[in-house]
Length: 428
Image 1 (cartoon, helix red, strand yellow):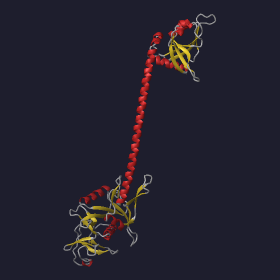
Image 2: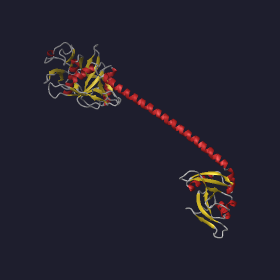
Image 3: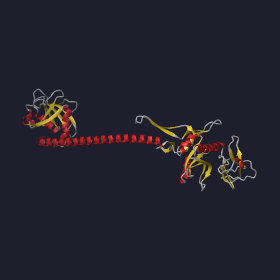
Image 4: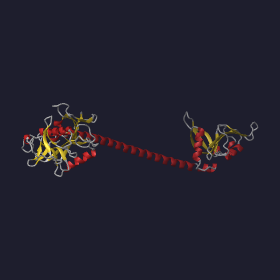
């Protein structure tokens, strides 16, 4: 059943209007023999009738299976009538079941503006429809400059992607149709970033919602995630203000973070430069030290490339801070080694590196002799006149031996070498 029919002479009839939209009365067509009325959808013959709820409409004597108007459900029928009634109560001209000239759409309710142009379609959508179909049908209206609001009695998969309202059917006669979803307000108080803000869907009589839409008090709003609903421009502005405040705060945070990154980079660069200077200074010091010790290397028969390893072994063996002095003529041209006790201050002479064997005759018994290999150990052993402490620190094998060398010609001591450290001879 539908609300519209076509008369051969009077044209289009709308059963929801007192004058049928053509200046005629309901009595002119209701139960009038020989009345020729046609369905605007399928062109089949229809008749005027009043339902048990006193609703005037047109029905097909034989319902065609492919006519949408003939096969509408009673719920669809009632919702269309309610939408048209709400639009008219708001002061707008609204017609039921209006098709475009090209018949690419047919609106359940078409609302006309002050220049009698169609501008808003109210669609009672109870049958299944995919989100893609909803977008496509909405775009068809938009191509003709017509907005649309889809209305359904329950949640649908398309209600988040096109302008829509969710309504509740009255349970009893005389109750008000209610809008439950599809229109929202933005709450944010106080207007600071610490205060929570959110969109909240509101409930109102369907007639109020239709009036707000037609009067332009609410507009279609699309959220950043693509969800569509109706809201007042003031709420949209409030949301924009909040987003701008958040963006400004985020920009400040980014600027602070960028400034911090810049400071960190500058500090890293300064630290790297300081390390570079320190490394350069240490390299210069090492080079100067190697130049200073060039004569000693020639005396000891050592390669300056192994000197850092030998130095590290000396420090490890001593367990103390160590510095090198000069070659000492009083100690057989050996290199003086000074160490500083862990507890206390000042460096004290602790050992001599590679002294000439001729200087060992009166060698202090507590002054350690440091040599890099077994060749020097043999020289020391051959020249020993008193017991000597010898550390063999081989920079090639990186092995250490701590020995006590007995004098070769001593009436009370047998010649030989006795280990005194944790490691035996290194075999160099």
